[in-house]
Image (cartoon, rainbow, N blue to C red):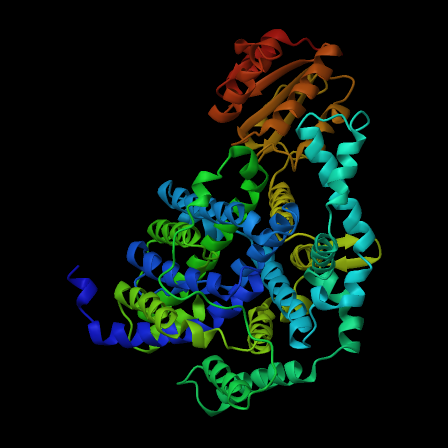
Length: 620
């Protein structure tokens, strides 16, 4: 507690500045997520305060970030679509998923997995971050043009037949759930169908239209319509915002250009009484917990989203710990990764209960805090309090912010979040794999796969697939490298020094093979060629295993197959200097003693030679 108040002046200035920087981004991320600006603001307030209080990075400022918002946006859209397009109906499930993600982060920190997050391959992170940028950029083109699919009467009209089908299907499902036999009680179905109003059909049609226009593919589908129906005022507000954000940075970085753009463009829109589209109204007063999370919770409703929650938890962990590393480099301190995950988990859990979207450590806000004098956890807590004060005092005013201004802010966020470092490195990376006529770098391939799958399919699955491919390619590379240094190949080799006195009369009857290096999945094909290398005159094979330090399951079964083949040919096999780990593996599946009895295992080559002299006959 003493350290918490050791830098009050610096922490106060750092926290207030970081809070001001966070305001436009919190509102923009809330709108982008689909839950509205208040959800972004609530997330920023609670995550910033509690992640700072319980976290392991003194100067970290947390809140909604571009990657977390992009994944949340997908989660929110899918859950709303599964609940008849009704946000209020879907909200408890959405917040439960966010709460579960926060609890998972606490679990990750509690079991000490924080230090292992850094092992996630860079190409996966690079492809994901670039995809996040593309998704945010593309999906904000429509609002920056002033086009909203749900409000395009001509576009909505084409979904009415499908809307009628869906409503009728829902009636039939309701009747089935109530045990009503449709064919026997068709009048009941007709009665319920007659109650369907045009307003119901229009509402369902708007939901379908919104779903059709969502995501990157949806944005591209309706872009021609948007270009035919440009709202020039909205476009000018968005362009003005973008120009100020990039232009003001050239003048000074002391004042956040994002905040300047928000104030200037909103001031112009309000001051001149322009007929613009404002953001959704931000509720006034202190945030109220959404207790429906607990009353409507059921295992069946949350089970389909467990993997999604885990992805959010891992993404938030990566995002936060990367920012912690940046903070360490700037302050010459060292963060506590597991404690940081616990803090982020607590912040996300509390934010979810109050209706906020999830977040993580935010690099830009953390850098602003440090440069403004922040040194302790108090700075992050003050940033959260600052946002709460703005909510309580300026909520109605903030509700007048033009939606196009936030779209412009998000476009700059999308451009900024892309991994240009990874993209610039593409031409220089070694081309180590061949796909037909094309030669590519395996790292570039992983990055492109994650980028394309994230952008056009599913962010959650893209990361999982990217990790699997990266792991397989890593295994292959390590296997190839180890195989190069491992000698189990079917090549003629020079006798070792202690083999020069081997009885000359038994050279044709006894075949000696050296295995140097691990016998594992990368070298089994070479090992399997041993049986073909053994001459027909040999009645005994000596395997010198003193340099075979390790054997995996693939190597184990390759050894079993070879021994079985030799046994069928009545060839005796002798082991020399068998090490502990390979011996343990072979004992597990009874290679020892079924194929190799204990008296055929020798601790030295000299002992083996004595056995050979006594038991192997010269056939010449």
